[in-house]
Length: 360
Image (tube, rainbow, N blue to C red; front, side, top):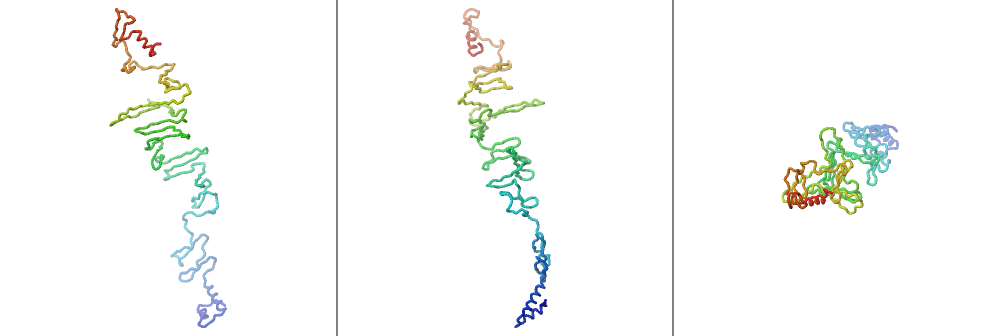
């Protein structure tokens, strides 16, 4: 029993021959001796003859390559996409969100989870950023006390609010612009209307609601110029009235309407004008002007200013240089009790001055 030539092996199988056991062993010994394989993992391939392709290294894959004699070779796969790192995909934190890290590996972060339809991002700095590119993005930061900060960063940052595809408000660094609606209402958590902004050929701001107390509107501004003649307008109402066509309505530049449903206090002022917390002029709920008791108040601060009462044409301060009233004597030239000046006796003049409170 030994390795034989092909011719010898063929002779074992001539017509009518019955090969012996030893001859069959020669056949197998010769065939195995012809195998090019020498090492575990070798594979048989072919070019013009049977050939051995030596086993590759760990991680390599069998690759077709026409440049090779046998058309095959072992090669390290090119890196494309993520690969699973050493942590099994079935282990880790429940609810984790997997992502590709800088090493092209599937990874996870302790503060990034998903559970019951809720994404959670934990962190001590900016927790989320939505970006158009590296320069234009929106960041969300939650502070340790629960304060939330939304930061729009970009070449022209602004916030645009849309409802059902309709722009309702835009917020920039210098303005808040409302959309095209006809009415906007700000309410408290108790559903009390705090302010309504209605648009109807202009803007109207209504403050209402049973829950409103204190100062529904408070304008507080510090004016501290160091040079120049800049003037502060703490409250500036400047409507433009331009009625055309068949319009016939008038206008009210400022309307204050106090509705008293139940007033338990005694101080009921329609308006109170103060300087430094001291009232200089107020109007009570019955329409009376209440003047201060220190410096007092003037009606007109110069004699050239005009004043009129009870629908009379306003005039400047009268002097003795003007026209004189007609004097009518009852008898003689001496002034008597029933003599009149301009149709009034002296008693009637004094009575009128007392009636309107100019004389006590």
